[in-house]
Image (tube, rainbow, N blue to C red; front, top):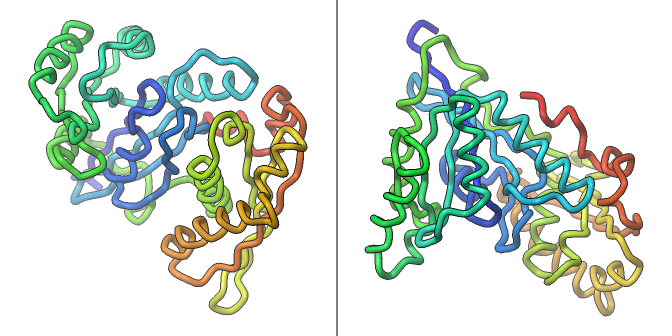
Length: 301
């Protein structure tokens, strides 16, 4: 206990810069779903990394955006709540991208809270010419006094060891916040539903995936088999038909892809059953959001 050190760190940034991929890489386990679509992360996700005497508690947040509905309001409130709880922040941006309005707003919040912050410039593997990085680093350094600026690739692991070292430098004495074997605060039922929603995001295009929520209705063990019943909620009847597909083909494809991830994560065979139901305009209705698991309790560490 005397030598144990910890830090609680919010991972923030505009949508689709790779925050969840970065968290998964840091933790060494997939606990946050990822896709190329913005707004993949809807809730605050906690991940814990314990190595030696250091424990890093990460709060992965939705990308900062202008809310257009109660779900968007919920996502922005989750960012605000995270910044009020943490010891430091990790701002994630994309290699070669200019300073965004979202970045500027987040930095203003750092300044108001007098929060130590690190900058991770992600996706450097996609930048063939690395020379713009120096200009980008200079632009962000003028914006805020970051403790460190680390170019990384969450996809191939470049720079991740250096980032981890800089994050550990933020830890303070006083013991750990969680047991050594803690990985996340996400219930297994929530993780299972999110793995299914990830496949919807990856397999379908345009607006339909953003109007889909996934809820695990049944989760039970049957010997060495894990039985999961997950319901996909969409906003319109025609979206239900698209999710199911001709002869159930799309729903089968979603289920097959999700089952592979679920079996890797849980380490056993999974019997996954999927259903699709319509809840009209669920993103616009606060009471429906509560019923689908978007609770104010999510803002508490």
